[in-house]
Length: 559
Image (cartoon, rainbow, N blue to C red; front, side):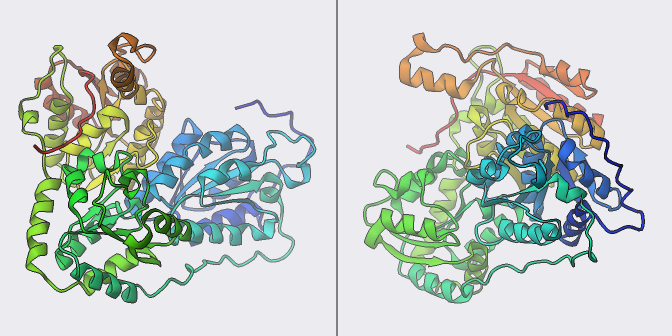
């Protein structure tokens, strides 16, 4: 961050606990308390120090990170695992621009995040203020909404509005810029009441479910596809109940690999056979190959339920007369209502459900004997060890980063609790994700599988994990390259043109040991189970540096 300018001779503010009119910062933290916020992820800076001071009068915990994007990634992971709004707090200028970069991941994951950023005071805007920028405009393309609070009295109401927007409809991140002079301002009148805004009214979920049930009764091979907002632990439980109630395959989609998501087995062949696809909060986008003939049958009908009218219009444009139902509605409510009033049973759908479950669980038989040709460790061997470790900790959480290595655990390791990078395709978030996951679920271990390129994004957050007591296990697939890009070069340009994507076979385990954590180097697959057990037993943030063969991510096809 840039150094702060020399302070002016202004008198210091009295402590928040003194018998004085509250400051704007006090209104901010009381509004957060009223909404049940128990933890804030933050990196300090000039413009937000009044909030730090106000937090001393609350029971809200502050997790102080080492880089602003990490704070937003942590808030994102917290929201996905708990269903609460995740709150991040950063300072102005580059503090906001660093943090806002991570909003794109939360937006793709449909994660309800509130990013609060301090900024230059309203009284100084347009005059060349310290770190002055239009912060609301910077964040707006990566958020559901982004604006600057314009008066101290409005701080509480604007936070209530932001939290409502983050939660309702298609969830997602919201940004509020908080001018520092408003945070420091003493409110001249009695403190405004803290309000909680109810969600906007939604269409009758039961009526929508009835229409979908009739459509499902008319189909022989229907699929119900759910979007990222439902791919949470709670959402996946609801999807399982819906599948049991309807006899229709219900599938969550949250991966940027889409129809080629290895975590969905042979999903691509199911989609190609479907005669009706119901999209519950699932965008018709690149992950479904835009619903084109390469992904679905030419006669396949579509029904779309979405809170976003723009996405409904996009689906109508893509499918035309094959879009037999489109309705604005909240996907989670419709999902629950459909489970209560399911379509009539049909023998043909029972056979289809059995086929679907078999296809989704399909793994290539060759993986059972997969070994690295180079004398290193194959990703399958790495993931088999992680699978076996988490089998002994059924309430544990799996975190998968992106790139080639991230696809292997998604295919092989099945857990109740999982966080992946999401539809945005971002890499680098797994270390912050893992810290937030352990804080949210301290009773069970967290294992994060990532590549060596990914590790470099947020390695300093091992320091954060130590300070806040959030041990986790980072399993680093180290092939000494940016492998996803290397594979693109290999496929597209040939082996002789695979340049610029090399890394060093760095001892990342020693980096973590130097930061105070546990580190282990593994060069033999037989040593992986012991390394995982020792890392867990250490009670420290841990890095297991696994020297792997750099192979392409799996694409699963039968036959």
